[in-house]
Amino acid sequence: ERECQMEGAGGGGRPPRYPRLPPVDRNRPPPQGRQTPHNDAHPQDRALAAPRSGEHYSNNSNWSRGGQGHRQHRQQRQEQYDNGQGRSSPQNRRFSRPNPQQIKEKVAMRVARTKELVVQLVVPKWARGDSESTAYSETVETAMARWRQMEILGHFLDTQCQRLPRGVPEHALLRWCVTQKLFERTQDGSDPVIPSPRDSVEDPGLLYELEKAGLPLRDAQQLGADLALQAKASLRELHAVQSANQTCGPVVLAEALQAVKLSCGSRTVLIAPQYWHKLIQTYHSLTIDQGLSVPGGEPMAKPEELLGIVRTGEKRKRGESPEKEHTETVRKKVRTQQSQQETETRNKQREEKAEQEQEAEEDEEKEERDKRVGEKEDTEPKAETEIGQQDTKVNEVSQELAKRAFCLLARYEMQGGEGYQAALPLPVFDFLTGAPLYVTHECFASPLNRTLASFTSAYPDVDMPFGSRGNFFQLRQLFGSTGGSFEANPPFMEEIMLAMALYFEHWMQDEQVKEDGGVPLSVTVFVPGWDDTPAYDVMQQSPFRKVMLVLEKDKHGYRPGFQHKPGSQRSISYATTFVFVLQNRNGALQWPLPPSPLDLRDRLLSAFHSS
Image 1: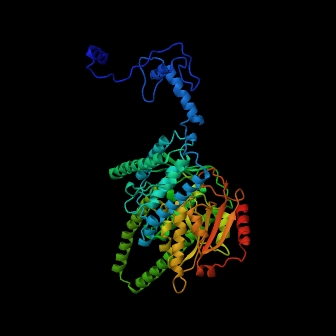
Image 2: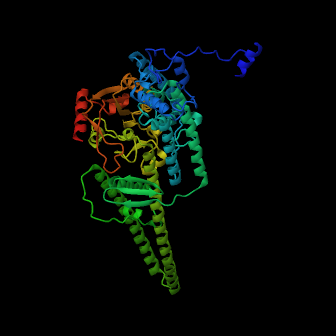
Image 3: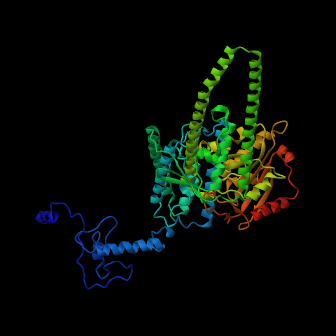
């Protein structure tokens, strides 16, 4: 209005900021084109009345924010977005529907980037001999705090991906944590689960999965960076809990016919009774082998007494399952060691008693006899003191075992990913441990799903008290001087499978160049039937490949990853499985394979079917 007054006053003012609109013709028919609200009005009126993105008009009650027309318009656009009919819906965007050539290019870029990262970041750690810390430093307070931080990271990822048409990629957080930990340059002082932000790299697998879910590449890269920042904040909170020295109280045990429950605070983990007793026996045998018996030379208490568990209800019937057979074997071994110790103790006591009798007969003086009687009276209170120390030691070991078992179960519970923990059936292990392979070590296992006594696992800090020999990448340090025949069923992640394939390839090459051919090496690998992965290319083109078998889908299966939980059932494989047998020269001489690979395949399939 002021500009118009200045213009009418003499023309010396500024020109109007907006050009004046021509008069509106109300009798003009509406255009036959794009249908918009208020279609009965003039196009200029519709341009003024229709709401634009990010603004609204308060003088129009129908189209103001929260008005009926505004709500209907937003609801219609949201329905079009969800159904894939709108022009801006992710299904109709260019990046969400690439042609087959674009898919091949993206897969090739992901494979090349994955191989580049493994070669640059993982292989140098083998040359330096770096490995994760195996010292047990986990506490119940740290385990519960880490569990909470993993839930926060999962909620953050779900919130960022909730508008995607396909939602969050399955196990995206677990795969991101595992790959980032694999690519870390140093392991000293880092958390065993949450990756360090200083070594964060752009994960090609996560970017590819987010693109498949409908997120643009630039947004996927930004989400990866935001996830690393959130992990940094989680580590800061976790370190604050560790430095606070707070206590969560004791771990409460409760045993029933169907499950054993370990509780601490608001967290509870469950484990089937047979796997619980398996953990007890393993921990019990390790403590005896390491010389952690109670004072006084007395044998340790039974596992049930060690934990202070009072069983109620009917006794369980003894079955013929391999887990119980293994448990009975361990029990017999422990009893044999205890009986040997008792026999040696009795023999020493008899010899000492005989010597004392001889000395008593030779020395007939009464004063010396009185002294001996006094010494005997002095030793009786000491025996009572030793018994009290023994009871205290048993109670300490009982609570220590409960805490370590809780930390072990919490570590695998917080991450999920049951499919990544799947194991081979027991009849398959019976075949592998026999002729002609004679496998003696599992490369990727845990105290909860392992079958063989010798195994390596993902988290040695909580797994070693229950039998783990360390991380997979410590295999060369463990068997570098003797070699061996190994079984490898890695998690179905491309980065882990490629690192495993390159690890065995380099090890066999280093042994092959020696004059005597090096130590004998043989490994039987089970991987999914993905022929577009770098791990497949490495093992398929390897000079050490002796046999490659193909197991068709729906004709074999695996034990569930969380088989230690009550009610778990065997799962059927809905994908093809590749089986590679890699051997160096001395390995092929020590474990010769049959001339026809079909014989090996038929025996392997029969083992799967018998399970």
